[in-house]
Structure formats: C-alpha cells, structure tokens
Length: 77
Image (cartoon, rainbow, N blue to C red; front, side, top):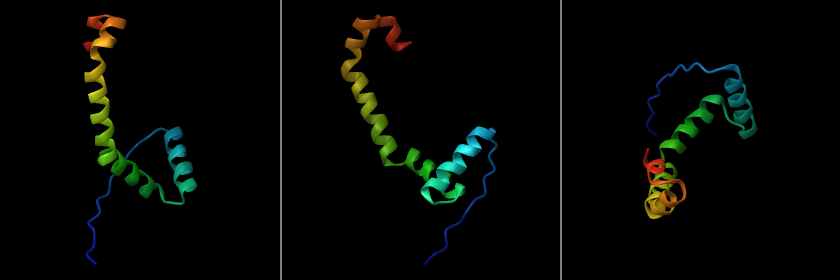
C-alpha cells in the first residue's frame, strides 16, 4: 500500500472553537486532526458541491418570487 504524503498545517483559533473541536472529535472517537480533515473533505466534497448547486438552482427558480416579496433591488444587492 502506497504511503500518503501528509502536510502539517498550524491553525490558530479561539479557546471556544478549540474546545468545541476537541469535544466533537472525542464524541466521534477520532483525533482532532482527523475531525478537521473530515470537515474539510466534506466541505470540498461532492455533498458540498451538490448543496451549492441545488441552492443556486432554487434561487434561479424563485428569484422573481423573492423580488416581488422584498423588492427587486433587495434580491441582487
């Protein structure tokens, strides 16, 4: 089995965020590194793209409804 190259990434976050990451990783039974790696994979993966595409399609379909409700200038800018 081929080795996967690993890169080290140092990130500074506030104490609350660090605590939440530790707690969520512990709850999932993984390391904080693995937890963060999984979050990035989810964000950049197919599910993330599918969500963004679906949201954009929804907005295209209902743009006129939103424009009527809140005013044309409010929807785009």
